[in-house]
Amino acid sequence: MRAVFKNVLIGSVMLGSLLMATAWPQSDSGALDRVLKQMDDAARNFRSTQANVVWDEYDAVIRETETQTGKIYFRRQGSEIQMAVEFDKPDLKYVIYSGGKVQVYQPKIDQVSLYDPGKNRGDVESFLVLGFGGAGHDLSKSYEVKFLGTENINGVAAEKLELTPISVSLRNNIARILLWIDPAKGISLQQQFFEPGGNYRLAKYSDIQMNQNLPESAFKLKTTKKTRFISPQG
Image (cartoon, rainbow, N blue to C red; front, side):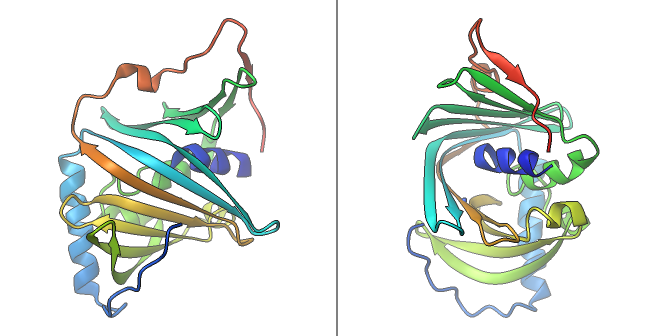
């Protein structure tokens, strides 16, 4: 189970200097409802999103951060939100979430790892679509949600939310999540996932393009005839 969450997050679903938040009261339910409504509106009109992404993964034990960069894609296919990531640094890596399954392809070793969340599919999807096609008020089905004020992210006064998982299985892997929402677009500019042990992943998005036609090739793995397929457990 832990491997499923980690591989979704490293491909999927994290530092520059953090700027001080403005003094919005955390108990301001009106402000929270406003942000969630913005996300609801964006979800109703959502077809696709593509962006550049920088993922910082911090290991609390060795106190080191690994950074991956690439492009990320989200699209609505029927009732499903699909995700694809193409990492180009430090090594090529492709991650696709579709049909309830996660595929991670590492060309360097020519291997595809297949993950099936099974009964935990709802948990996986609940954070996969955070800020990209998921309705704001639906967050309360999976998380306790708090409004933390506004923070400047790349010149945008982003609305900052804190999510605490309700599900025990999800909380065992992700202690809490921070979202920075663009109020004009109702989508994530930045996400941070904290594990119980102190590790975290910070995802920063830029050059965000919405509701454009995405290349079909982005959602297909570029494997070879010799590619090895495995299904890790855990």
